[in-house]
Image (cartoon, rainbow, N blue to C red):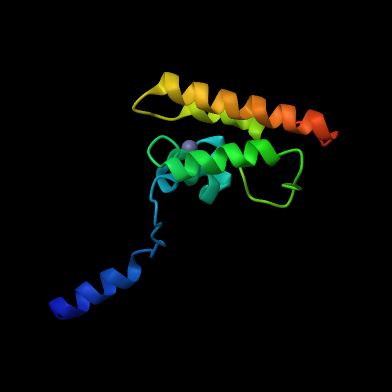
Amino acid sequence: MTLQQVRIESLLAEPVLPERAAGWGASCACDDSVWPDHHDRLLRVETDLDELVELLEMAVTWGELDWSRSAVVPPHRWVDFALCHSWADPARMERIFSLATDVAARSAAGTGAPGV
Ligand SMILES: [Zn+2]
């Protein structure tokens, strides 16, 4: 067996894992990683204003739109999400996610939709 054959066999034996664009959720084992796309978007809320706006829009519309078939971290998990992850400013992120949770609860209460 040549060295090239050994290398090819070892490459074939290694599992091929898909790469993730964001990369953050791939190594996270938190309860919210079952929603990997939204999980990673929530992780970007601290550094990406568009993601912060998306979070607040989701909170405002939580009671108006049907999110039941969407693969999103639900509002009742947002404060725990903030507490379970590392942030540059943890206190600010807890305030943001607490505010968003409160907005979603008020949105749901105002429409009679299921709570957060
Ligand atoms: Zn996580």
